[in-house]
Image: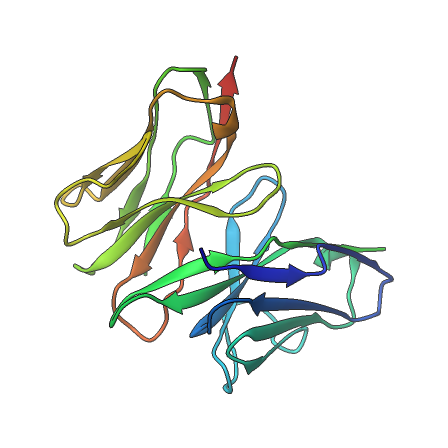
Length: 118
Length: 116
């Protein structure tokens, strides 16, 4: 099966600093990558959709200046949480879509990143 | 806009027994995909089963099967011969078959406990 690697698995940072999370598709080229946020015992909330070489599309209510997404290649997308605050502490998950047919894709998920802002 | 509803926040099943998790969705589209994902304590999302809306036959993957009722917009997951390793959060998800994006819309999840 396809592998999506997310790094780091966990990170602790000081309030006011920025944190970068990487999402890599290791054995396929991802047509699209997605970034989710998940609070404890809650569902995945889509933050943004990113396509290689173009600006990310953010969901309503997500601050694009705070959550910077860069999709530099077909195998790498990064999420940077800028000027992090304790309320940004959460579990962040990426997924990458691999084309499996003319009109079909399949999503593969990274392991997630637990961000704690102190 | 599409929505996915899971009305059972928590469920419990005895080992080796069968359990059914409920999911309903709302959409005006005729072509779409439905999924069940499992999220164990490791929090890695694992695809359990998928169903194409144009297929009338219910999908089956070993001990996992679905009851897809398109008219009722219902998509339940049946787990047979439950095992301790099945304990996890289960998410139902919807994805449009058309459009520029392939984003998944998730339900709120059902936490499944398996009792030995």
